Image 1 (cartoon, one colour):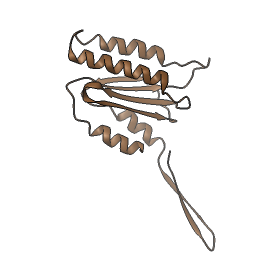
Image 2 (tube, one colour; image 1 turned 60 degrees about the vertical axis):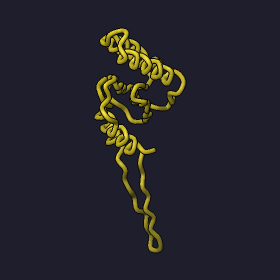
Image 3 (cartoon, rainbow, N blue to C red; image 1 turned 45 degrees about the horizontal axis):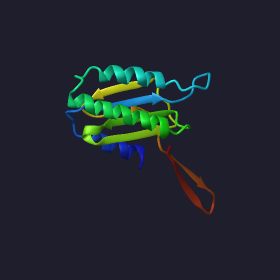
Image 4 (cartoon, rainbow, N blue to C red; image 1 turned 120 degrees about the vertical axis):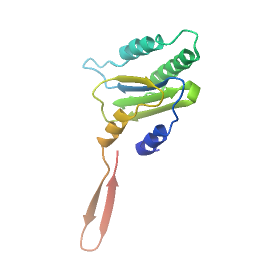
Length: 147
């Protein structure tokens, strides 16, 4: 599925009464070869989780999302990806990820009633589609390139 199609599907997500997590991570290693997003995840997701009452359905939904995000990052993260975007709302049956070779300027966490898509749209615009035409006197070939 293309990034454009994924953006359109996420944009069509109906606002939910439960928290929708939009997490953007720069997954490139630092100068020492270590992941630099783990500390951000631990700190930010715990802090945001505490903003909801402990026995509320919103907190339960967010806690499930945090567990699923953590499992994904531990087991399914592509080591060649420079950026990962994760959208999650267990109560709304949403869990989508985008792994990209493009880069984002910094980690970001947004929690609202729908996915926060601006950074993803911006990431898509970094690698626009283009075409090249190769011709000679007898033939022409049109090549379309996209990330």
